[in-house]
Image (cartoon, rainbow, N blue to C red; front, side, top):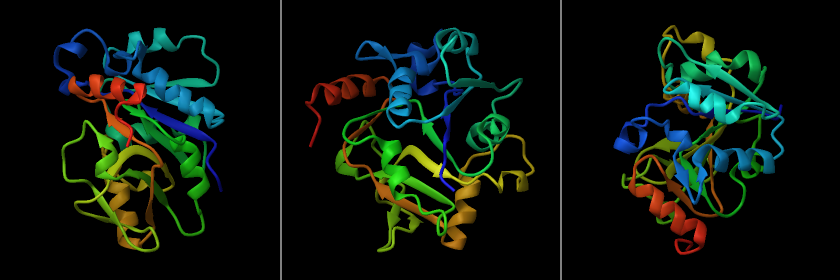
Length: 230
């Protein structure tokens, strides 16, 4: 079964952004003259995603107003507490529907091939419960850690220094209800999939920039202008 709906994560507090998110949610921070969330929604539209669910929590009214009257977008508001990625995805299932779904973080900028189209082309439901789009460290801008995963010859993932998880994936949701906590990370599902050899990865064909911190804004704008491409 192939995914047709997407979860766009936009509920976070944006604490790494400092003063930039004191009175404005991170998805509305501008990059190259447009809010981050609009760059993400462009990717969804280009990939032909039929249904996009956006989760909200911090300064949610601003995100709601920005997305008002946009077709194909549903708001999944998290209250009174933020639910993290796993809890947030489970909360949005009534709108996402059954089967695997795309998910995408709203705090990144991409160049090259559409990340969602790449995931769909690589998705093999008979052997995969999750497919993460990764970026080699040489093409991951604004990101300083040692990487998140390595791939074996078949594309199966292992945790450890290597490629950077980009925040884009396809994931099956049927095991979300096995987790008792209300708020939890999707890492919980990934760990189950890793144990069973059903978490896979693919490399993004292009560059990527983390815009979760102030320095990422200038780096992302350089990337979009062509200065950061490799």
